[in-house]
Image 1 (cartoon, rainbow, N blue to C red):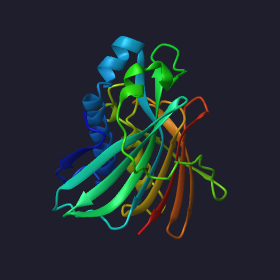
Image 2 (cartoon, helix red, strand yellow):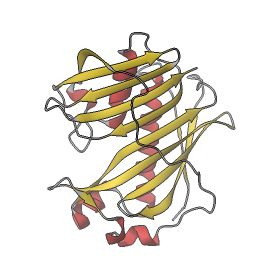
Image 3 (cartoon, one colour):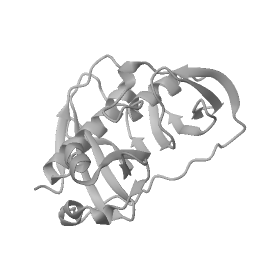
Image 4 (cartoon, rainbow, N blue to C red):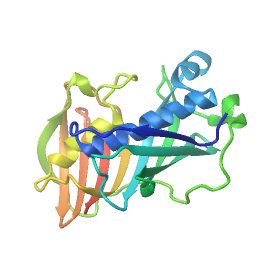
Length: 233
């Protein structure tokens, strides 16, 4: 059982680079849960819960080169109440080009309520490295007055194994729909509040000033689904 896992990914021209980065983080984390004996099928069968990301932070020192493979290194810091922090390094050509931190929770499949990590014996026994990041993804608030824009709609190809729109799928939709689309991201912060599903028209609120951008998507019922704050290179 390893406290840290590395996985190398081949980057493609399509889909968007930011989607690939976020998807590779999620997939590397999923591979590590297998290594630790706590993957989704085990959590569903033994505890009736699934893993979900509720907050995410990523910082890039340089834009990844699509012509080179990307290595993602990940580990977790141990459980804290109902959440766990998972750290990442992004490495290309032997150099760390970025880092990320995600806040993961366990959610009861039936009630959709949070499940305390301390109830998972496998987590208490899982190893963790001595050196961890000191970043904790924060609760986002709009930096300025948000304005209404046309709703966004995701297709069935954006669904994940939990049946809702995949966390990574929101991001390129949001960034590319800004008045001045952001495609080269330096920093990215995400808050996920409520699940959304394919075919739903999601009301959209925007703020943009210089290289700073903020996007809020709402559920059809008027609840906040997703907050994104980004800075461009």
